[in-house]
Length: 481
Ligand SMILES: [Zn+2]
Image (cartoon, rainbow, N blue to C red; front, side, top):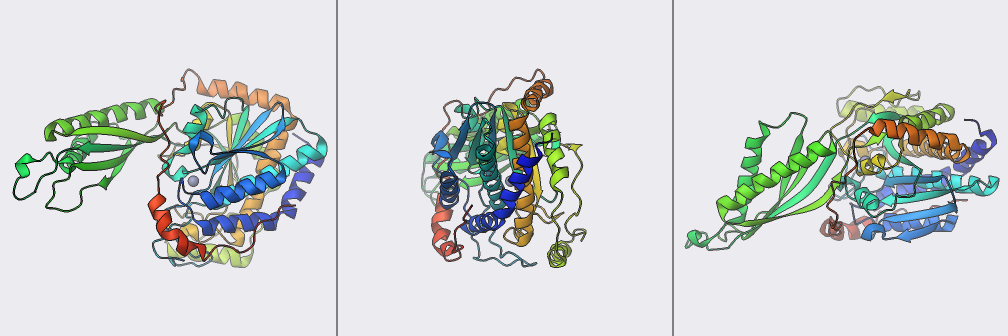
């Protein structure tokens, strides 16, 4: 993998646009939009991609904030994809090593998806410019994937055929390191809401006339807890009650519980879900209610292809770690001390290529990784040792730490894409190793074929907070050149 002058060109392009990327990163940070409601975020990303010359298809898979931006023609077809949603009740002032919401209770970024988006746009812009400059053949498809926090969009993209002609895919995600891995990375997951319907009655004067939907939810809960003893310890299942009635003297005729079922393989997750449905059926029989299940999303575990990982690692080594200033390291150490993790600061060396250790978390990018050889670019912008979805994980996300990490991530992503565009043998090898890795596992979507995406997700919360959040939006707009 050489391509020296092309790589120098993309690195210069990204360096020249470091302020634009930083601005985009901060704009999305302050938008702080929850899954399926990322209208400002995806609007701005689409505007930038269109201005750069991409042809954008909006509302893909029927999701108002999803998009696919295409540039170029012919093979190979390389996909970039990433997420851009925030997390609820996570508002946090950047650059402050203590919990300090910008708006109390409002959503905010505590998993760095704002930086993910800036990395992908920066990389896409630079690759497109290199394709023009050097007359490179091939197609770049850039996917905006909404609602990652609820694991929604990519199983729908795969089901609806958007990845069909894609040869290889690159996903970027925030981390504390600059690096990549290969192998099975995360868990499969089914997200499903069970709704029980019964009959209301006055809870004091005629409870015997009721069929209590909330009782059914409670009995499903107890039933599933009894089942837990007989499940393999690898499973992780958890729930919240999303409807439980309105007031105590009216027996609820409707109640709902939202479950996440997680297992190490898609098949085990499917079987776990089947067992949960039996428990729900039992709860319905006991209470004389009826029930229905709505699968909000269902994803396969993420996996990373070895060849793609090697291509990425080559460029990780080439790009190297950002240089952190003393004040950046000081902020990171302050946060680490505050949350009682080792105060080592940001790493100063890139990570070596290694095999992934499967984690119980999930990401809907997993779906893509079973149909297309996929590589993951991890870039350093999160405080090491700090778990996501915690105020401390929001601190760096609109600071120079995230901005530098984003530049490094975008360079790696763009350079890896260049290698794949310019060396067809790499794409062929990725496909070959992908086949070996998947072996005899047959990809069968967990998502029901007729399932519609949950467009109402988070709407109420965003409607409540957006007017307050708007006052904090970044005034300028990113200008790529
Ligand atoms: Zn994430």
